[in-house]
Length: 141
Image 1 (cartoon, rainbow, N blue to C red):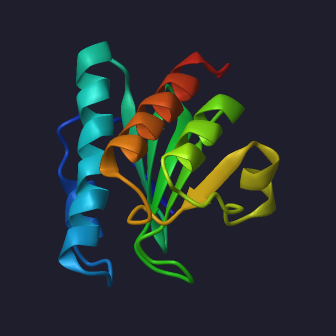
Image 2: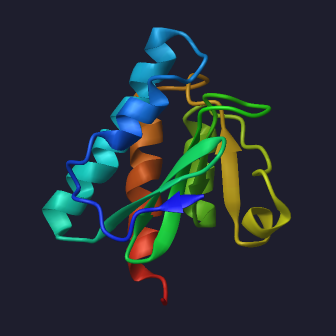
């Protein structure tokens, strides 16, 4: 995995990498929108934003805590995993998303959830990104 030590919030590499995800264009646009939400939040709050480029995913990290993983390959290309508290998970489910277990036991242990970002409204997913970003920023380093 390649982990950038410090990435400007406006860095376009996450989107350039996600452009190669084998999903329809509207699905890619939804992934791009989630990256942009996180970038806007980092700019607004002055948070450090880092990017991890894994073999099958792009992950965004705020204040040294990973909070979203966008899959560009593997068993679920186009899927998204978020680090959320129970109320945010409930809101995501109420918005129409089916919550699934994340990839990897460690992510499951820490409360991550996996969704198909096309299964519900974009607004509900963007709110989940806000919640994951807040959790990342408030978590102990």
